[in-house]
Amino acid sequence: MSPAETVHVPLDGGRAYDILVGRGLLAGIGPRVAELGARAVAVVSDTTVAGLYGEAVLGSLREAGLRAGLVTVAPGEGSKSYATLAAVCDGLLAERIERRDLVLALGGGVVGDLAGFAAAILRRGVRFVQAPTSLLAQVDSSVGGKTGINSPHGKNLVGAFHQPVLVLADTATLDSLTPREMRAGYAEVAKYGLIDDPAFFAWCEARFGEIFAGGPARETAVAACCRAKAGVVVRDEREDGERALLNLGHTFAHALERLTNYDSARLVHGEAVAIGLALAFRFSARLGLCPGQEAGRVANHLALAGLPTTLRAVPGGCGDADSLLDAMRQDKKVRDGALTFILARGIGRSFIAPGIDPGEVRAFLADELERDPRS
Ligand SMILES: NC(=O)c1ccc[n+]([C@@H]2O[C@H](COP(=O)([O-])OP(=O)(O)OC[C@H]3O[C@@H](n4cnc5c(N)ncnc54)[C@H](O)[C@@H]3O)[C@@H](O)[C@H]2O)c1
Ligand SMILES: O=C(O)C(=O)C[C@@H](O)[C@H](O)[C@H](O)COP(=O)(O)O
Ligand SMILES: [Zn+2]
Image (cartoon, rainbow, N blue to C red; front, side):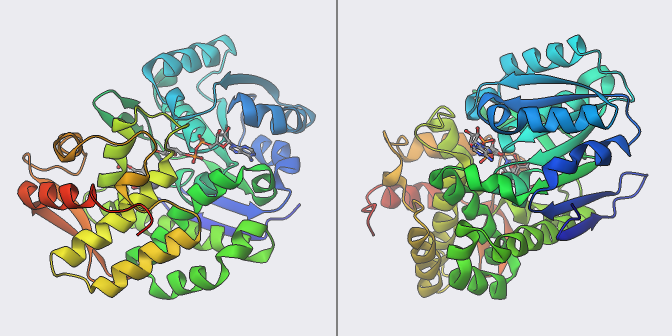
């Protein structure tokens, strides 16, 4: 099966790779991985995804002459932990994955971040392939080489930059995603428009239903997001500058994920991002940077897509303003103790705002905690 779209990521030092996007690509994953020159492959997946696609992937790899084994973890954000990382590393060693072999992450962003980090540290670094199966992973987490796990101190605080050697996004796998996980992934799709592409945001407003339903708009959206992210990553791989824009909404989102104990039953990353995007725009409006009408348009669209947009929409609550502010102090964009936010002058006009006054943030959060979740 030939891909509907190929996005090239032209990193230097022999680290360039392709992102293949199309329906049905998993069936042909074996020959594509065999071309990479490994002898053995360890597929890392969660039990849900392994149950759906594990046998087909292992079969395709074996048919292509590769030795292939499977390492599984429990589904959900809780697996981005020290304990699961240790279990995955030992599972890969038990599979006798050597330095020239491959790790293949088959699953959503949790599996991709976890397996990618295990690959980064196993025998001091083995190559890995991303086969993302959630919308979020296809449009965001499988691209760009950020890998890692969570700490009780904060989200993604332990990790490494480790680029995949291939990304293979089979958009047909999204047909088995739950509606909740599809909506969550959509928050990161909308994010690309909000960062710097107002025309893409307007396209999303008009076509988001088709992305959810499947069909050509889905591949178009996945490839557009991958193209946008690849461009940023090539210009600023290690987030010395521009890449921080991809963090729009995430200072709020990561604090919420920590305060809900990374409990996917309460809040998943994409839902936290949706709340974070709405907050980033409302905070920008409060600071007089962005018209309130634009902030309203953002929240309305996310709500129309079935996403939460307020702090009080977090099931079980998310703590008070001080707890939220305290969680934000561990954000990786903090410089010399000062908070950095990604703010916006309007839709598609985001920018990096260092040195934000914590008092302003605290007052904003206190007001937001009073906001009706239906508003
Ligand atoms: N590295 C990065 O650049 C980056 C970018 C964005 C997000 N992330 C991380 O990604 C994670 C979130 O990823 P996610 O939203 O994919 O969550 P996830 O990996 O937990 O997957 C969501 C759920 O969907 C299930 N699932 C996945 N694919 C499926 C399919 N095809 N059919 C049926 N069920 C399927 C999984 O079992 C899981 O229960 C977070 O940890 C976030 O921090 C990383
Ligand atoms: O790739 C990036 O850079 C991003 O910021 C993408 C985000 O959507 C993603 O959630 C990422 O994991 C956040 O990175 P972090 O450095 O804030 O942990
Ligand atoms: Zn994200």
